[in-house]
Amino acid sequence: GIGRVYYMSDLFTSGNVALPILESADIEVAQIPEEAVWQGASLE
Image (cartoon, rainbow, N blue to C red):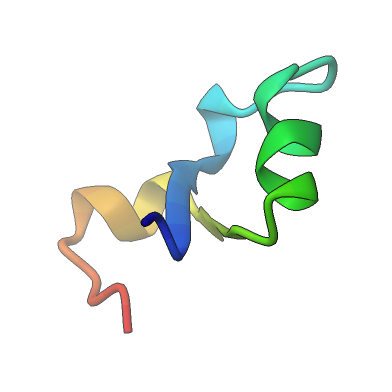
């Protein structure tokens, strides 16, 4: 199954319907700042 979902902060706006679904399924949701994505930061 899915254990963790990463999202880029500027694309994850309020009113997102996926967040409650993921949280109710005990899936960890991790925010990645846009700057870190473009700099190739490690997800760990």
